[in-house]
Amino acid sequence: MLLPAILACLAALAAAFSNPLACSGTCTDTHDPSLIRRTSDGAYYRFATGGGIDIYSSPALTGPWTYQGEVLPSGSSIGNAGSDDAWAPDVHYLGSTYYLYYAVSTFGTQESVIGVATSATMAPGTWADHGSTGVQSVTGDDYNAIDPNLIVVGGVNYLTFGSFWGDIFQTTLASNDLTWSGGAPYNIELNTTSPQPSEGAYVYLSGAYYYLFFSSGSCCGYDTDMPAPGDEYKIMVCRSSKVNSGYVDEKGTACTKSGGTLVLGSHGVVYGPGGQGVYLDPTYGPVLYYHYVNTSIGYADADKLLGINKIDFSSGWPVV
Ligand SMILES: *[C@@H]1O[C@H](CO)[C@@H](O)[C@H](O)[C@H]1NC(C)=O
Ligand SMILES: *[C@@H]1O[C@H](CO)[C@@H](O)[C@H](O)[C@H]1NC(C)=O
Image: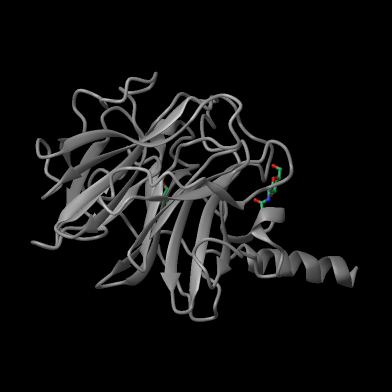
């Protein structure tokens, strides 16, 4: 009797995640969010999957968030199916320009392209679409070219991407931040168990380690197709002292051999957290931002809410 009681207690402790910070204004329309603070005035900007990529801004991290317009009001210039429904934005400030990487694809296919748009201010109407970066995939490739994430290390632009089909890969962009270097993509994370449900990677440097966050499980359509308990989205992590290889989880299991340590899973009314990123905020310090559904509100994709938690790297492994 004792061991099961202790195990149940440990499981409860492991699941003791903090609730997201309260969010005000429009906190929906936030599937696969990307978040950044504008350097000129400190305003926060948020972007998410869908349509021409909606733009929200807010005077503070927690809101009130208001709708501003779209990054690509006439769709992406990439010709592929899905160009009027861009996915998974990833925004960075490089030099004096905001770069927004996005994906054009259709659900459940590898016919995918990673595109990029740039702006000096992030305001609607200021975005120039540069179309494809050249990082793309077709049916039968080793990877699926969606869910881009950029990190610049030693002047090299590493682009991490991938979703199912071999999971998370990485390549580099040329020094213009716009086009593929031509370097062959290499695998940095693989869940060997079918259906290899890893995607939405985000690499973040803290102290001596690069942390590879990824979303594991089923992302979408919970209202019409509820996953088995535990198969819904959750946020996992591996770390490495190098950006481009050697990622392991807390037990030392290679991320390329199904490794991954749970950072945030369903808890209380928070269900299916994922599509995450990490942002170093001047007020809160590092924060994990993501989408989730609130089970007391609704399970539809349109019900996805912005979640933000402080994240603590001090133990060497991120804790929310
Ligand atoms: C790998 O995929 C299996 C099957 O969906 C899942 O149960 C497991 O949690 C995943 N592992 C990681 C590290 O995400
Ligand atoms: C979930 O929704 C309920 C009802 O609107 C609200 O009271 C609660 O604060 C929400 N919790 C989270 C974590 O979103």
